[in-house]
Length: 360
Ligand code: FES
Image (cartoon, rainbow, N blue to C red; front, side, top):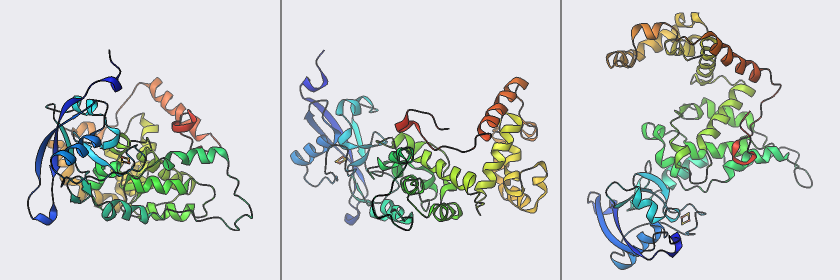
């Protein structure tokens, strides 16, 4: 069988989302057929269509080597770098054999496949003070940084600012003010750097902000979207662990209380007890939490969702009121994990990305 690079040119159909906000016209789909070798990229295909059929097609690109982050688009509904997506792979992922190319989500369209990164992505990056606030006094020569500490922040340094994670962030779709995965991953780059002097201030700021680290809903979309394995959600979880575990920051968003209630319930029962989670998160981390006024207030405001969940059979009254049970030996195994983790003198933030070791 011929190597991918030896295969002759083939025809590929592209379906592109076109939109010019200045025209006053609605967005529409535009189709073109290009001819290229299957290992060529979606970007090359768009550029061929632009060259041969319609010079007005708008797409942004520069390096064509997955380095500059300019060519972020959606291919068949998924965020991708157009220059890093092979045509044969894109065609096999297409619903009807036609490769669908759209602008990224969560950002306004400037034209066709070009989105306004300044309006959303870069604004959010600026929000997290994306530079080192050096410890004083500054050494006469270089700062000496432990190797492990630099390994830990290397993952976030791999970000090419393409905006793929922002495009797919479900929390940002609901709350456009959410600082978001790319900017929070950037924040970890400095929070995790031992040369930075403002770890507490940075974390306190991001924890107290209602659209900060506790606004993430763990949907994993940013993890899947990232073409560089930056794992933005993992970085957000690291920010939370340092904020709550190391600095004991109690935030106005109930993030720290929610986390404490969650881990206590799993430790005590082996599984989450959903009905206890909300009252404990707002009223205090014990069975009595539900009698505290803030818990009552929150329960009342959540009643419409609770009723909906009951009507749709997502929860049953008995299932909600009684804790879930697991066999005694399984509960012991869960609690042994807690004992092991909690008995460690310190927590490491090493990750699989570089070290090959799991987080500990
Ligand atoms: Fe630079 Fe695609 S053109 S990342």
